[in-house]
Amino acid sequence: MNYIVKLAPELYAYYKQLENEIKQGKKINEKEYKLICKGIKILKQDFRQGSHISKKNQGAYEYFVKKYNVKNLWKLDVSRDWRLIYTIEGNEVEVISFILESLSHKEYERKLGYH
Image (tube, rainbow, N blue to C red):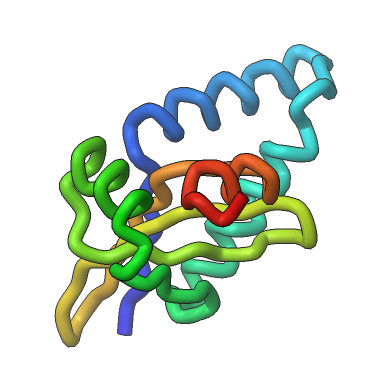
């Protein structure tokens, strides 16, 4: 099985911005950049490392379906205080994990209505 990881366009642009800042010696957002990289590495090994987000969470699904037109949602706890939200597509040959958003735990709870 081939696992591919892609970033949603907005997140990809932000990821590249962080990467450029770090190359220029700006370390302000280095932790977030490293956490996104860690998440990509984990999902390349196996997309099932995350947890499926229940469709009963209608608020979250409504937001992500409207913004990204997704059919499923998963979250990956990259660290104790950082989450990646992603969706998966695929078949028997390859699975693509699309990372939609990178959030602190507090942002994740607020966005998904747990707070």
